[in-house]
Image 1 (cartoon, helix red, strand yellow):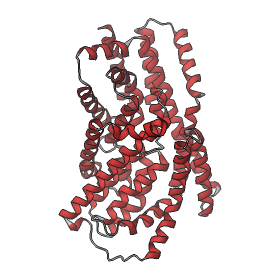
Image 2 (cartoon, one colour; image 1 turned 45 degrees about the vertical axis):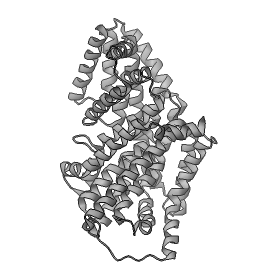
Image 3 (cartoon, rainbow, N blue to C red; image 1 turned 90 degrees about the horizontal axis):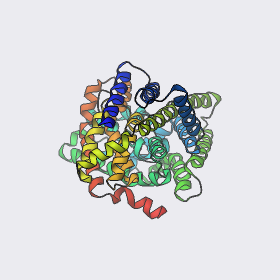
Image 4 (cartoon, rainbow, N blue to C red; image 1 turned 135 degrees about the vertical axis):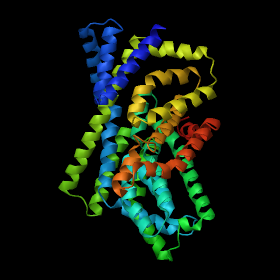
Length: 436
């Protein structure tokens, strides 16, 4: 009971901080410190010593080097014309598929996610060309924006993913195995999206009008040339990781070099580009690393208060089956996704939920993929759906309307979660094959 009261007190303080508009990482550090002083009876010098050790340990963690590198690579790509090339390159290959160019949203986001690691960057980069092109050609506005909002979330799931690195560090799980585990679920959900677009186009051909384009063999050759930059980066980064040649951090550095080379070959490399991309990478990296340190401090505070162990025992006493536990956690994370961004959800909840799933015999690698898919749901749900805000800024459509457009894809991601739960090998087969 003492642990439950302590957990309730910490949770109340966290929501109070959020309600007051305090920065999340500041709020988490404050709640952790207050909890250790008031609930654990520690003096301030002892709390300061604990905090200092956590800051030093996480600031010097080698795994964290991958985060700014992957963000910088995504920033470089975002500020070049690679998104235009992705659209031109994909167009001939989807011309004869029901739904036609609507598939460029799904396929473009899938490709860009494989070199970005960010949901917002994926949505913005692909959307800056497809929203205009599809609207000018008479494609369904609802299906265009809905599919883009949903597919933009692939930046979280398809490796290299920033949020996977965050989960891997906090859960002490191999990041390489997580990257491998995200491939098949990402492709599965992309296939569900495309299948839905095909079904809609077959039932209502007006959602994808014929534009009369006729593609010849040389058009397909030109399309492959346009896709070469993105394929090259995918091959460099993911190939280095999966073959064991480089760690994720080393592969991220190689990816940045590759992105700079491609920008140079495309004659888009400049001092201004370097400064803008570096500034963007530093700002986002500082935010994520601050959250990681705050989350580690919160996790440590909970450990001193015996909250994870006691809560795990309390839930274990309920004798929930693994399926019921996953169902409960799905509802829990959907609720959190209404109010928090993905990184915040993971860093705030993992100290409590991870011991529960491990005690239930659930593979932490599988749980990482499940958690990321549930976080993806939050990207398309108001009031704090990042992808909705990105599209609202690009199209001036109301956030609520875009959320309605994205609802079918929200449901498809729920189906993806069910398939992952019923067939866990979807996530676990590839890391088992690559790493044993």
